[in-house]
Length: 388
Image 1: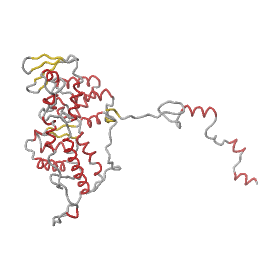
Image 2 (image 1 turned 120 degrees about the vertical axis):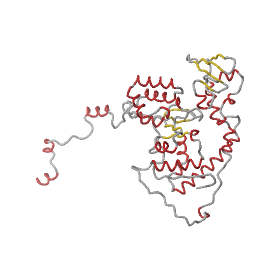
Image 3 (image 1 turned 90 degrees about the vertical axis):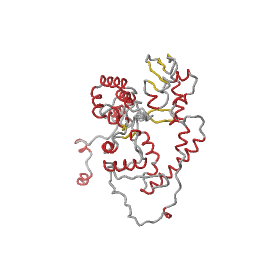
Image 4 (image 1 turned 180 degrees about the vertical axis):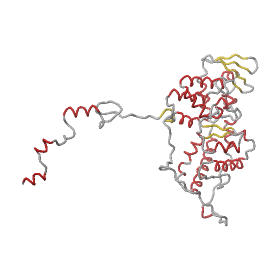
């Protein structure tokens, strides 16, 4: 479909052939020549890795750490191991990564073996091995999850109706972004400004030594030291180079020069850049009754392959995923049952052992089974009729 710069693709299933066709269409649409300037993040879909190695051998490929942890916790579900896994992924330098892996091995050697066997090369899932020219330190595939949630209202429709619904959703989305950009004050995007303001709160207690030019040796409260070069916009922690946003170690030297932090942020986070991205809009389209008729072969939908169990439209969130509630990050609350009879958690009134024991002690409850003595004392109806 084409509403002027809108393309929709529909694949029958995920395998190597369909992924190769999709990647080839993506290369033509984006006019990708230098593949090293792009990053692909996936959840290790079937056939995707082999298709990427064949068509884009030099492109950077990242694996979503959240999906790695979901497989990791099946064998190692403790909270301590979970924190260590994320520490390994968030390590921005190779020395920190090696230290985190050593701690993981000290806690559970099998967990460290699982990481080396199933995760593969750390360059796909650890910040310490990400290239610096992309200006992104993303570890989770949140962009795809956000897109799936955005098109949720169109996923249960037929192909043409689904693509039409997605096109209208994006037409409204681009319009809303264009209007929102005009109301923003300041050079940076709101989310980046909030991130910098949050980082400034942890600068207290830091000191530095200046070499007289552009080099600074920054001392942290924890005793660590980092090297900052303002001319190159580099820090030994590598976070400034990874994200394009000045890290916490660069804030004191920048303040010493009485300059704004916004001037030391990469242009990709500027409001003007986003305004340039949303200059193009999607053009309106007429209804199906006005579409021109052609003599081309009718395109049939792919064969339907019914998946096991009932199809699910909504995204099933994991218990470990953090949800934002009223501006705060917290885990989903899972309440346990509380018995109203004894006040103990873990069961309800119907299965309360205390109540059951008291009923048995008092003789109450279900009537006793009829014994031989009771049968003789209270004969059945047939016996009474026979005696009569």
